[in-house]
Image: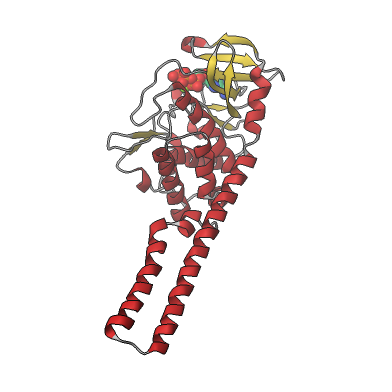
Length: 314
Ligand SMILES: Nc1ncnc2c1ncn2[C@@H]1O[C@H](COP(=O)(O)OP(=O)(O)OP(=O)(O)O)[C@@H](O)[C@H]1O
Ligand SMILES: [Mg+2]
């Protein structure tokens, strides 16, 4: 069970205000009402101790937050490395009907990747409004999946700037099984629970199903979540739609112990650090933190932190 740094740290003003107020109240009693000087001395010492403790707690909170952010950065060091490896890509092959902003690219290391530069406009309420903001959300999904310990759930994704193709995101290609598109029932329950947690924390707005499903099944039958650009909205309105069959099927269901342990192990400040590092907007970050803490507190997704938005399956 983790304690949250935000509990230790803030709200910043509250602790700072409390002790001077106590001190002033004591001085007022001594000066105006007249109090036994010994009693007054004891009370002033208590006020001083309180002031010292609140300063110490705030400092401890800042240290916890900084350590968490450092751990997040170290865990994600592989991002930049991956982007560098495919810098010298070859064979950009435009992909299907999305030709123009989505390419298969082969890295120097022989790896096959999907590169997206987001020149096609996809608008959604509160969603990203610039190509790079879309790219950052693709990477955010990968980072958050790593921080949650959901190994392999989102293929390795990094920011990249490719010659002729511009800035965007590169994601490892997931070789899939031939045959019909998978449904949410094609996967082990623990994987659909992890997908539900990730989709909820990110507030995925486009986890479509069917022919254009934004999830795949790999050669080992494991779930992979792709196309994560429409997520982390900066606003939640009553017309906001979190679209994910994974969330829809697990809402108000207690998560299993393994998944729960992973969720509880994520310090909210680690999440904040990873998203802040990607320049995700503060309002989008706060929304993600609220949803994570909702799950940690209730041991399930309740949907409370997504209100007044709605959760729809597809
Ligand atoms: N990492 C990946 N591994 C394997 N295939 C992928 C991967 N990423 C994307 N694809 C394939 O490319 C298709 C289009 O990718 P993606 O969904 O990310 O792009 P999009 O332009 O947002 O498409 P749409 O608007 O149809 O959702 C996917 O449906 C999938 O078939
Ligand atoms: Mg898609």
